[in-house]
Image 1 (cartoon, rainbow, N blue to C red):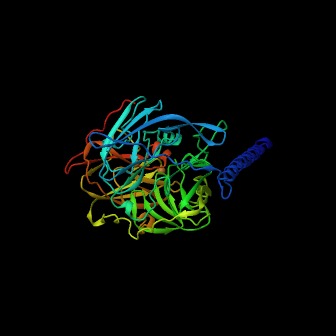
Image 2 (spheres, protein in one colour; image 1 turned 135 degrees about the vertical axis):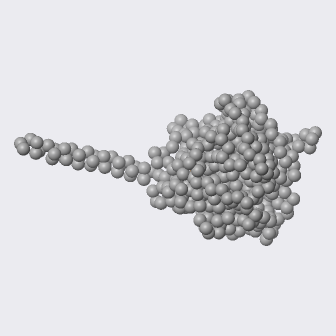
Image 3 (cartoon, rainbow, N blue to C red; image 1 turned 30 degrees about the vertical axis):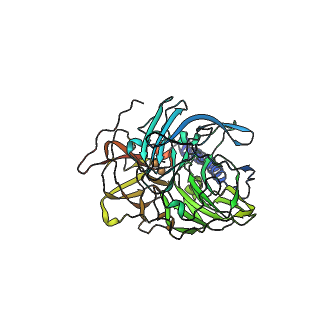
Length: 507
Ligand code: C2O
Ligand code: CU
Ligand code: CU
């Protein structure tokens, strides 16, 4: 063996060691950079110098058939999130977001949606019990210039629902640009339980969304390098206002919170640690008012809270860190460790008296597990449900009308949060990994957070509206996951019926 041959392995080793050191430093620096930039903390740092914008109530008329008619126009606009900077946006009947629709139980509504945005879109009525053909899901595309009209009867309790586009593969962008609004329902009881209920006076919707801006003021849809929940913005807009304050003129104020974000979670509470009274979840009023410090909402979920104010007092609504059941690494890149000041409430020096909230608000969900005839399993992993991605031409589940069913939803992803939303119904949460749900999840729900590596069982009844061909959706409401195909379709059929053929599209 000569000397040269003997030296060669050492030279190789040296090169390898140097290479791995360099790689290590680059990777380490990259990780450090990611680590140090990921957490947002705006506690006590927001100026609150802009009056909070409140979406107007949508105008409506009653037509010859007694239907309440709403006209909505989805269009392009411009909005000033940041003073002096105009951002191109989309909105409904305005530049950004849409008006609040309001109707009562038993009423027949007719909604005409005109698409003036220059791109195909859809409008879905999230949380609404209605026939699949009225639902505004991915099959009901509205082409540019078209008007899409749908009518149905409001057949469910008072609730804070919402509407938003639901285009297959492109929901995130349409919602993010600003197409979203509330749809409030009233019933015979909801106005008589002592809740603040004068819209824009002591009763306000708060649509909470995170935004990211490019240097030129346009909305940035880019994702971070590590992005388990997709797009995360570092600026929070509430009803489109960044740093908004709300003048409170009554002893109690009701806030209808909607997490209208793509992938951000909010653990709502007051900055001063005081309590709030939670009175409603997604599908309506809770059985009884609930004193809470915090309420966690994943994308798509709603909660109504009542906050009591003293004359002259100021309170800040804040989103607090919440580990979301994730480890420190994943928690960091999902925004779970962020602290975000959202809105300031400013009480006047004299406040008009508010009523006492009734001890009983609404009947508890009347579904019993013993009545369930079917149990279905849904495993969420990657961007799949039960190993499959959304296919508009495939019906995944066939439900018999009148049946009560248990759906067992498992998040099999270790580091990725998912939630689960079902169209058409409101459900009852049976348990979270075998444990009874916390009180804030005991009312009607249509969207529920599924922590990594846990199973949530939900119970629901499919009361009516059979249609073998036209499907409803179930999906993860983190919009990036939904857009990537974490969605499936179900039809409701007559006893003994089977799935038909979903509509074909040539888009
Ligand atoms: Cu909020 Cu399937 O939607
Ligand atoms: Cu929905
Ligand atoms: Cu998901």
